[in-house]
Image (cartoon, rainbow, N blue to C red):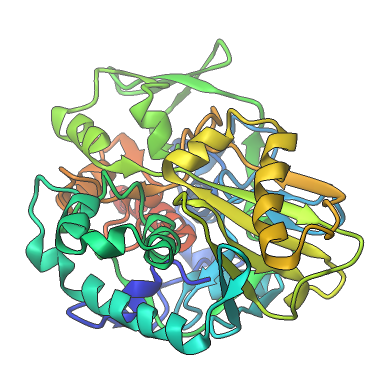
Length: 453
């Protein structure tokens, strides 16, 4: 699976980076350590918060990380309750060449496997298998359209409205609904809210895609080593009125010279943290204008595999965004008789109101249409509910109608050289990605370090 796959296939004006950004070292050289008594509070122990905290700690700052959950990782959460690693958030390294996650994964002991996008079968309703040529032809036309659709869009229209107006027959075609769902909605956000001008923004690393096989959270655990992290601490207020910042968490007030706020965009949209003084209008506007998507993931296991030895199984139901993409985890982890599938946008939000039994029934209706009614029900299922997750309120940011690329930089702008902001939603080039989150933390740590020079 390739996040923003269509961007990788469209080379019009989008640079491909081949060199790696600066990475954290395991320990700073003594000459690099700064003599300082400055204290820093980092709000959130996701990849952005951990990368910032680690760099500042190694530079000599007194750093405390406040995390609302009971473990590190943020949206890079791994569930191992079924004996295999189910990554609830980030799963892939998107382009391994020059990507900082590639090096971090090696340092952290994260194992990853190549996922072959050509190892795929496409099934229509009735279990009808499409020919590889039919699928490839549609896919090629799909990329051609995506290369040029933004030239026909405008600032007030969504991707969906422009596409449907230009290609009404394709809008109702089951294969095209799948392509739009799995290759656009999955990588961006709700098509009826996605900008028709900015849907293909963002830079990409070159190289193959790799999926974590022993858990993406190994990176978070690696970054967290030697850091002072206090768990189950929900920050409710950041008061930066005076020289010392007062951070309220679980009824306790902690003071610091600097604070780095790394909570997801969904938390900022929900006004879950009270800022005193209120955030500048330019930042409030950016919070409102940038979109926050919802993608939910579902892992199902069986005693034995009944499906083909291929990487991806796709299905084209009438309803869009509904369990149409299956990742065969047995292909990358031979002991796992497991499939991972997805729900996107409004259907993803709908699944959060459904019971496990209802979800399994819907997923199995698709699999039974492909493989026959006699296939067994799964032995177990794991699922996510990112929209209602009080630690995220969504999956990741995207360019909605009304978004301007400047808004990502506005979110990254510090306030009074005291309050700093990190997270994938603050990275104009790499928003919505794990590597974007990581790089944003390094960026904000560098700002604070520079203030001491």
